[in-house]
Image: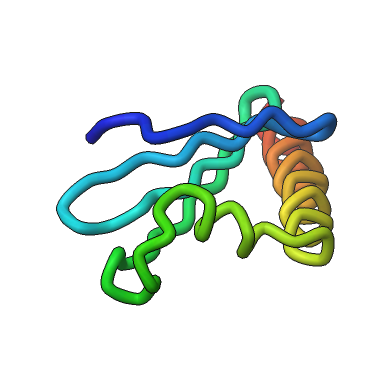
Length: 82
């Protein structure tokens, strides 16, 4: 797996990897991360730029909301087991 590009956003870090004819888009925020896989064959050959075009405001906003849910869920389970 190799790093193709990085995109620092105010809310999180985005890293684009390439592995086995797939792009892996990894979002990181603190201790949490989300990954999305996309076949290179599903794109028209625009590489990293084409992948980053998919990351529009609406999608990034849903990723950020999911991080909030992840944080809440983890905090809840942690408190239950204290």
